[in-house]
Amino acid sequence: MHDLLARLPLSEATIATLINIGLALLMLLIGLWLAARVANIAQRAMQRANVDMTLSGFLRNLIYGVLIAMLIVMALQQAGVPSAPLVAALGAGGLAIGLALQGSLSNLAWGVLLIVFRPFRVGDYIQAGGVEGTVEAVSLMHTMLTMPDNREAVVPNAKIGSDAIINFNRRGTRRFELKLRIGYKDDIGKTMDLIRSQFAADPRILKDPAPGVWTEGLSDAGVMLVLRAYTNSGDGWGAQTDLLRALKERFEAEGISLSPPPPSMVLQHGRLPEQTT
Image (cartoon, rainbow, N blue to C red):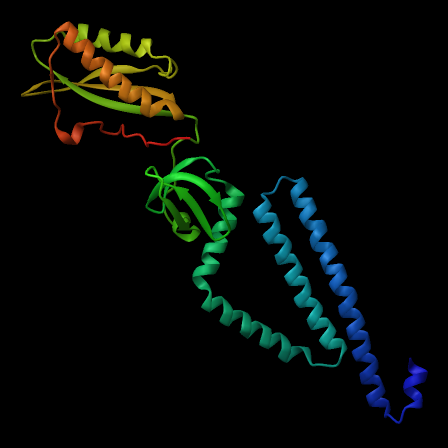
């Protein structure tokens, strides 16, 4: 190639420039192939390490993009283009893009953190970002939830990450709490034994931790009782509603009177989501 250029009526500077451009193009072609190989090898390594597919794909593209940017700078430098202005231009462009996409980058950063630390998984019932529902998908930008009434909520990851995350079934069990008020003339001991028998009769109510019933307070209208019991996450709502019905029927059969507690005490701390699986 050098002999061919030597026969042409070109100056030595022009020949050197053409050679550098040729080497830069060759470097660019080989570098593109190597960058793709390195990125693919890194992705396969992350997949073998059981890294989330969404995160591994994102990191693979990030590695590839960084390598391509470095390759372009090296190729232009080889071709004789001054690198300092180019690097400055890339830095200014990156800063401008970062400022323009500040919200999107925040969602992206929180998406990576949510995928890495996994405060919840697909199928969990959570409350996050002011929304409550079952997790359907977690992407790098948004988390999709199906709400109890079957509406779909697409919540930005930055909103989820900046708020408290309540995972209703991460630990596998849930505690519910009920408050009942009986009359002063009713036998407290008999009432508590009846409630304990209903605990034992329902296999969904766990024996460990053990359920319990306590006298919480006295009021003008009667004696306030508080009931607490644990169930598996998916059984909580059904066990709670069935227990209420069974207790009402048993109380009526045994002649135990029930007076309604104040509205603020009804199912206090015991509300369970309609979906927990």
